[in-house]
Each structure stands twice: as structure tokens, then as C-alpha cells.
Length: 164
Length: 92
Image (cartoon, rainbow over all chains, first blue to last red; front, side, top):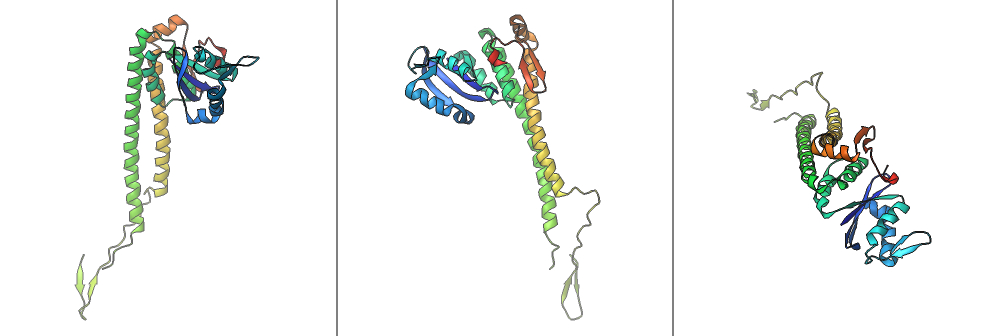
């Protein structure tokens, strides 16, 4: 299972991969490093601090993934749980140029989608990716045309008339 | 290039006149600005494309039906896409 962590303002912070509840791998984004990097370092040393009074849940405990969710709630973060079946869709969604809040909203919806509908999500996400690539390619072509024009104009204005 | 020979046998080559700049010619600075603007607009367009493709899919067909059945709806405000059904208040 994979848990995706977001800040309160919906910025992607990182992913926690778990197996049978215990931690397998933790990956943080650059923003995640800045915001919760120090906390995650402490998880490795002492465990995940949850509750009041504080109890520490170790990485290898089967309740680790529940502890991460509780820690997220207590630390003003959001945690979305995904089954391995949803992972391919999340990878496609993460690639799309969306606002953080939009990416979060679509992932939230995706995480609650029945497995039978995942091929449809995958198809939609791939379609969006193809359209985005097409839009970018067309724009790059226009920019490249303008750059050539700019280069021509600049070279014309700098080269003096040739005298032989 | 026309070459003339003068009486003292020195070659004179006519200097090509620079083309006069047309009044409506686009200045390089303007093109550079256009490039920057196009880059920003192109990325915005790519973002709109992604958002609209996904919104279109989740608002109709089997995906739309699924969200309708679960009470989940998508909307769009000035800040972008939001989900109307959200069981966790932290997710709002």
C-alpha cells in the first residue's frame, strides 16, 4: 500500500510505501524535505509520535501506516491511502500540469474509485497527457518560429554593410 | 556587386545600401516579450487542457455515474477544481 502526504495547502510532500502496515520506503519531494524532513528523520530514530500523551510507533510495527495517518491529522497534513492497483493512475496524475489543489482533488476521488473503474481513469489520464503534450509541442513550435525571427532581426541589426 | 575601374586603375566597389526599416517592423524586444508571454500562456493552456479533460471524464459516463452514486461531485471555482463531497474536514 502507498500513502501520499500533502501539506494543508495541498502541496505534495511525499510517499510512504508500506507492506502489511510496516514501512518499506519513504520518499519526500523537495517541499516535503523542507516541511517535514526533520520530522521524518525523527521517525527513523524514535518512531512516529502520536497522541497525547505521546506514544511512539516504530517503523516495523504493523500499525505504522495508521500512525502516519494520525500523525498527518495532528500535524495539519493530509494523507491519502492508495492500493497498489491505483498506483499507475497516481503516476500518470502526478505528471499532469495541475494546480496542487486540483491534483489533490483528483487523487482524492481516484482513491475512492472502485477497482473496476480504474481502466477508465487510466484511459482518461493518458488522454489528458497526450493532449497536454500536443499543446506543449504546438506552443514550442510557435516559440521556435519566433526565436528564429528574433535571431534574424538581431543579426541584421548588428552586421554592418560589407565593404570590399 | 558592380565593380568599376577608375582611371588610376583602382577598383571601386559599390557599397550595398542597408534596407530601410519599415515603420511596422517588429522590434526584437517586442518579439522577446512575445516569446515569454507565449511560454506562460502555453503552460496555462496545457494546464487548462489537463483540467478540462479530467473534469469532462468525471462529470459523465461511468465515472460520472460512480461519483454521483457516492455523492461526490466536482466543481470549479477561481482557485481551480474542488471536490464537493469530502468525509474528512481536513481535506476541505
